[in-house]
Length: 380
Image (cartoon, rainbow, N blue to C red; front, side, top):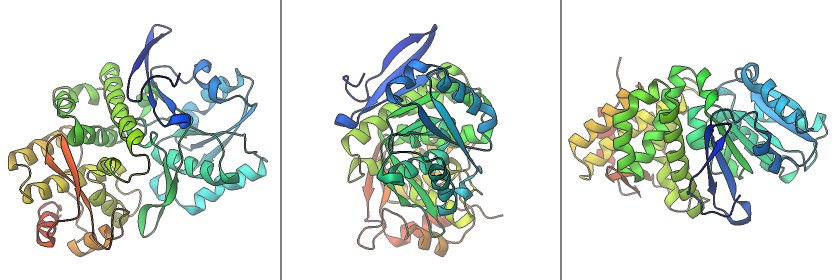
């Protein structure tokens, strides 16, 4: 299964429904990403990574009533007993207190080093479950079953796990790769419209940083994504995952190219932290943050005003915000100064040299940054 190169898609006919599989190429830690409709009940996909008779499913109060029983029955069909851990839903619960609820349940259930943790949910569940898996007994097996578009195209792939701190988003965590990512597109049927749009923000990101033809496809097919056209969604997920797999295989621990995946995130994380976790969805904050990054790129003389208008138009078409909340420039600057990409006391930004070509730079004049903040904040 892991023999083909990372980023290369394979297509299978499972019960006459097309499934696509690609591999994140990390040597003996390589793993498949399966993308398609009706995958939650496919025991043959889970069997290779679930050899034991026990598993723990971590989910939340929103996803559990929808998909927990289906997954438990699939596991039972493989002879695997599963115990669920059901957490409160929301970014505001992505913290050490909620993480401890996972540890409490694992210890109460006497889970062993061979007992896998299965994340069933969106990015918050995936990040917290992965961090629990990385740290419980110093590492247990971990499987991602993302149920939101944002998680399917981005956060479930690549092994970034962690929790938020009151002073900064995702400041505590670990790189810990899953053994499998199972992206069942049917779970998007129950996704609220604003969360679908939030996922599209991360999809657009891939076009902006490294794939102009994909961005052009998004401009022509955004209406299909918003209408939840299965073919369009699967294409968008597969293209996004292929880019993520390529980047992660080349730079697993973000020492170089992987940092480009943070387009809009320095501004976006400041929006999330400054507004209070859960006030803005992550994808909404990334959308507004990407407009800020585009505006700053123009002020650096790299892209044109027409490029910025084009980028803003696409985010608006996706139903996403294109201006940040009025936190005040000083608060933005303070929060961005707490970002993980600060090096040597200097803020680093992912900016656009051109649409389809991103770079990381720390050489941003403060006056240009302040002008961007003034121009891209929505005042009531």
